[in-house]
Length: 170
Image 1 (cartoon, rainbow, N blue to C red):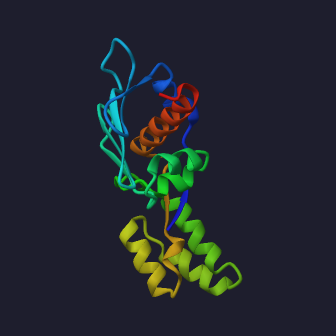
Image 2 (cartoon, one colour; image 1 turned 90 degrees about the horizontal axis):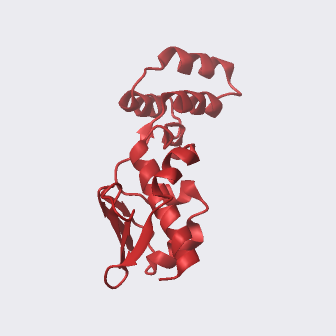
């Protein structure tokens, strides 16, 4: 499954620009804007998981690293990688990217390309079936984070938190 990160930065980052971090127990933080409940959330780093819940979420990242906070600090500049660890079902099927992926898979064979273009249908289930029927790898079926606000919120909550944590070191 291929994923492409294309979230506009400003629309999410700005939502968290005034947030502050308050420790809330071992490896647990309250991340909020003072004086308001807007976008208030709790972030926990526990047993290899990053859990975000509250006004934003719930979101669960599963980095498969015992030190989830260290993983987040080291990975945050790679949105595709970070969002690939998000276990909340947030990715959205991208028909256009899938169509291009199927065509790319057989671009050296004009006859097969014609067959694929003629057989394409506009839904996820059929795209998988089509890839299998044509003997193509299902990697040709693509997902994207660009249209999904949930994924955008999850990433920017974590990213702005990590940036502020590095600056303040609570």
